[in-house]
Length: 586
Image (tube, rainbow, N blue to C red; front, side, top):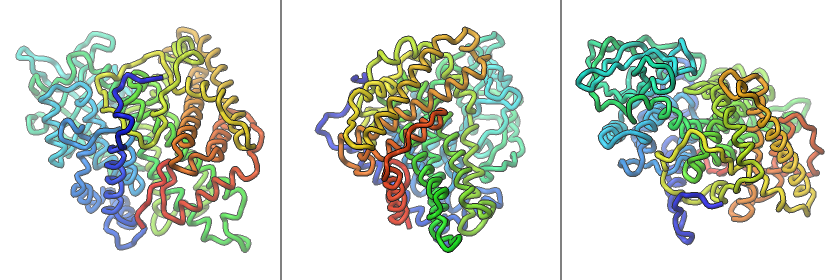
């Protein structure tokens, strides 16, 4: 399959990859070894700031000096943003130290700014780019506590006046950086009429707001991400100019759902950094802790748990990679993939953290010292399952599309292009305007179906991989049959639990298709010996098939050992546990 995107010439060097890798290395070098007790942005100082409920000032200063906000501004607007998958890699280096710093310093600005890059006019793009590149912040306010994810029922008002301007009235709660943002993107009711055309998005700048008409609400205390400054905004008939409107009157729901496709794709992948640190912490414990005159790592259960956690990170990164690259290559299909990532990846990481906590034992509760960072990450990571769209909201986005995908795409559509599964190949620019709410196409699942027929079956590991891929394809066939049988009510927000369970299984199939695609491209390109080996792919699919409730045959001897040896190599050499095998500080 060929996408509609214009790709760079085949013989062109991967210039984007060179820039991304250099930026990752620069950020890693500036932030330094997080385990160094004298590092001003190391774990010791981050834990102290967390206990105080603050973002680490030295961390924010370092990110200021790095000009991190430029990562959220498109190149056309003077920033560095050219690829969503590269943005994920770059922010992963911040998240592996502190989820709160990643969210509190800049990702909130990214989530807000995507609305403007997607539908803003030239003036709005210029103004917001100026704020971010100047070191300022933006916040986004979609939801209200009274209505949760059902933001079409929001009551915050922006009433248009005779001169075209608006009067803002009402309250928005639980907004990250509300009190220190220079601009707010506000999802607002602009009509009393029912339906999706009742709301609009406004970009409101602090400098243009009458301070007498605005009150910053008290800060909320949280269990996780304690350093993030969550508060709220209370407007009392505050006037804002007509040019605050983003994307047209009554287009708020459409704009929000299009913007979600980028943020849902990106943010869970950033969180892999925190899971990477957690796995590294527990591997250190397992190698150093003696129990019954041998190390914890020698205990089969602990060994299997750590290997499984490594595989879950690789699986999560594969799905994240596919979703973020789909923004560029398959923007019409991104709605499904973005929701799948936002639903499944936080779920996998949360379960992984729980399993790791069992290996760590009582030290899991320690909030300082060598293992304190684990306790912080296990509190912070669940926040990513909430944000601007909880798990159920992501499932609800996919449910009505299942019958259409089953009827038009699965087993008959064209497979995704090879570039979708490649880690470092250059991509065309982000096509913000081509993002759609639904398309009826799923090239990733089609790639799974196409791959099954051509998988090698020479070695025992290859035979196991083929068998597991067939099991996933059979699962897709069952999903097709059950999706076509969904009643009209089961395709709406009132869907039964069975419909939500269908989505859960479907996201697992997408994850498996992503793993298979990444392995096949690594094998074809030959640029990563571990990823090109079928052992990790077979082990990852084995976990996914078991997750679906099946009991596949045991993996061939040596398969899990290869994964274990790679885990140890990366730990000893201080390389990341994601797809990129990135050198880390320290």
